[in-house]
Length: 374
Image (cartoon, rainbow, N blue to C red; front, top):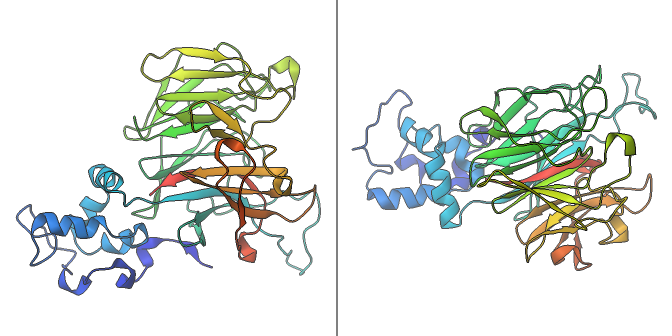
């Protein structure tokens, strides 16, 4: 399948008569123009509000007013309040086994190429985002986060030199474009990251520096202003920790100190975005269990673990929660085939798993992911 770019889609899926509103691109509309010819302004707005996100690319090319409207944060918030946004899973996924120029499969020891896969649970569709700034594959161990319907990709290692990167790129699903943003303030790897549309920020904490020293540092990236701000450091250093935002709190779960490599903590630290104060939560996680990609938000507050939810996905598990449903991927045993499931098991308890049909080109290992509300 071709890389995803909604600007190339046909108008058929837009749900309204495009021929009635087609306007030359060199037209300069003002606020007296009708959004849709012959319809009251509020009704025209509601028609556009109901467009599927997959049609926004082509719709934004109808005229400048539509373009400005569809790409505005106010319109995004209006769609969100009206219940017309859609939650999808964006995955850092390895491409299936690739062939070398002589036709043979690459063997062990070769670093896989990672791309961003998009799964829509409503229609069960799979697609890939245009690689843009990553034509040769994503940085290894890069982090994904989302804010205001945009996808943020940050950090990771150069797939050739393994040098840590500070690059930050933001993908806009309406314009189908990547934008290079202000780099991370420091080189770090395996940090916790999570985005919040409440305040338009992505929060980052922990990980390790180039000397593999665990870090206490924390930062907030303002997606709307393209600016970084240093936060109060955590109470202790946490390498390979996991991050998530619950309400107005940024949770940094588990991790380990420099001198205790791989001995994962049972505690978490929680940053209150209003007061700017961290608090420690002991017993929040099972000691010695890696938290990467298997931490979820509980129904009654706090966090839950998906790590032991089902033996079918106990190896290489990755969970992306999308409201009441989660995409769960993993293998039953080391080296086994990667399976994909939709789960409705609340609070990380064993529940109903529905196997997802996956085209071969999207069957690769999932390293990490996040939910984007488009």
